[in-house]
Image 1: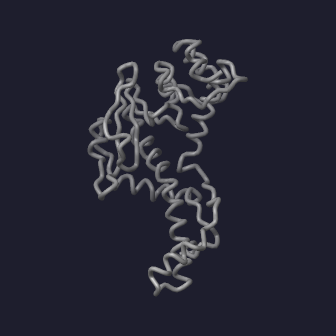
Image 2 (image 1 turned 30 degrees about the vertical axis):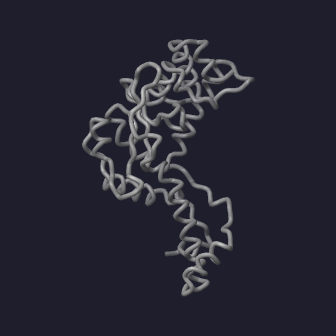
Length: 245
């Protein structure tokens, strides 16, 4: 049974009661953000993730899988995670392409460029997690709770009053404006930085969330503090020539 079918069969009120009991059994604190986030999908089936639940699940086990997915997402946040090393090797022809265009580069230079690129890609891989946790920490006081683990379809944060927010790091056509879901609630959409120039959009997020403290300086400080306290968040290959700097 898919989670959407489970909630539809139980109804919103009974689904929430069931989730509350299962959360207690799993030692997941229900009166935190999880209650707010689950209520968002219990009240609107269009927000239920489609990839939770299978043919062997009943109502309770499908809801249990949602709770475990939420908790796994929260436990894997940037400040707590240990990122894996890249699972692929660099293609040797990349160095040949760069070396052919910029002939003054030595073999050592080209090797360092390759590893710098891999390091930058690893940083990009955790950027979304950094942004998500920064907002989770900063916005909880204002009633916004993170939908950890992609547990609400197309939504990253849920407010205690039912408002919904989708967050992206860079501008794109997918979240350029608000959209209305079936129950009439607006999904507010925000991106941090424009893709074609360095222009940050924190003022618009402060307006959406009723805050004044969100800023790029504050986000950068959060990133630096998180990596200082948890260096394993950014994986660095042992053979990377930049590793010992």
